[in-house]
Amino acid sequence: MHKMDRKHTTTGRLYWALGEISYHILHEEPPPGFDCGREEQNAFLYGHAWADLQDRLSTTYLFFIQGRLAAFAAVVMAGLVLGRKERGQIRFKHVGALKLCQLGVDRRFAGKGLGRFIVGFMTAFAWDVGREVACRYVTLDAQPELVGWYEGRGFVRNRTMQAQRIEEAQRFGRTPEQVPVSMRFDLREDRRLRLA
Image (cartoon, rainbow, N blue to C red):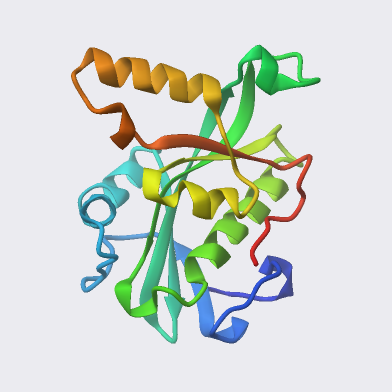
């Protein structure tokens, strides 16, 4: 179990002292009792996280406050496809990224800055990884109602990838408005995530 310290902190307000927050990579089935109020995230944690970690498909971090499971985040290595206009000076179409593929905050800890803190923690982690293996972006798929929240923290929409998703959704008869929105945070342009 790792305690949070200054090395892991980012700016922003938390309702807890850093010494109260600890984390570790999932090393067995997750403890019972977690509920973030979103069935997809709960089902991932209890139905897939441990098996996916063993199969090297994703790595799940558990975050505890005063010994209680308060949140989790799962990450994977990913490549981001950028359109010509999105690339700017980048000469590659495919760019290295760390994808935050799942994030859940237990209802008991919701609304107190923990989700914001974990996104910042994972962004700092991606920055560290990027010194060893090229990683330019943090990506995620935001539920449509959360896009504004992520934009407020410096994420932008991946227009090329989103257009591909909408096209695929329409091909399979799904409603485009309900398709999660592909987003990215540029580690080179913004070294620190906006947490306010």
